[in-house]
Length: 129
Image (cartoon, rainbow, N blue to C red; front, side, top):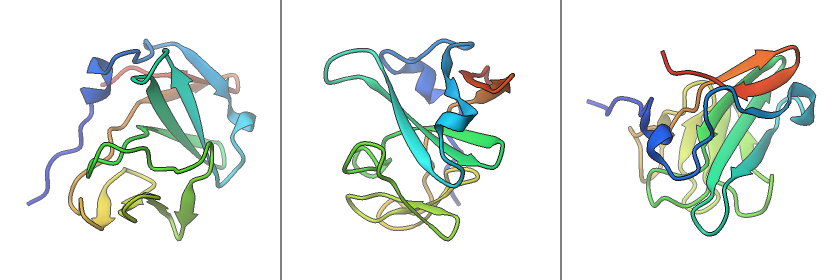
């Protein structure tokens, strides 16, 4: 049995952006790619990972559940292949569409989803249902 996705945990993180916060334009994220955005200051910044597919954008907290390290090793350089996002540190493989870990040391765990909305081409932090 797998753990449920962490739908609201991101809100408790320091510097978590408030619902409605504008992050960027959809076009600021290349189609089929990922970008990272930071909120706050210091070592505990909120790291938002956004993945774009066409006009759809998904958001996750940029931390691997295995060891709480960022999924990328360099700014805006994410390992994406075959519909999967790979952790650069331990090669855990996550489904892009829902953040579920299908392989690696945290198999069965989830990335923390951050809801997003798109309004007139602007990507904003959404509200959890």
